[in-house]
Length: 161
Image (cartoon, rainbow, N blue to C red):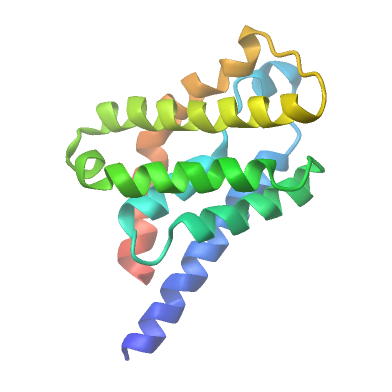
């Protein structure tokens, strides 16, 4: 019985991460794209925070490799930065769980900001990168969408995991 529930939970986690990757690749108008949150990072943050014994640094690294292939970026950049995100969440998940949603949203936006900063730094080691202030606009969307992502994925976790 436990094995069947665990496999259902694994499928739910993988499907939610796959949907997040699709959400990252869906084309939107320029104005919307300017504020499009990093869905993959947010969903990874949720699963590491909710199930740190099942989703962790290695999961973040594998997910980052898939994102690198999907986006056509240099292999390993998103892998390393999402592994760092997973590590940070594993270190902080005890505290993050206790925060109210608005405080969680701010902290998640900061951690996703660290992810974006690492991507810029690592990309800058290979080729010149110029980012303006608009590169950081999606962090506002991360903070706005986090409570909804949390509620939806919590319901998925309660039903399948």
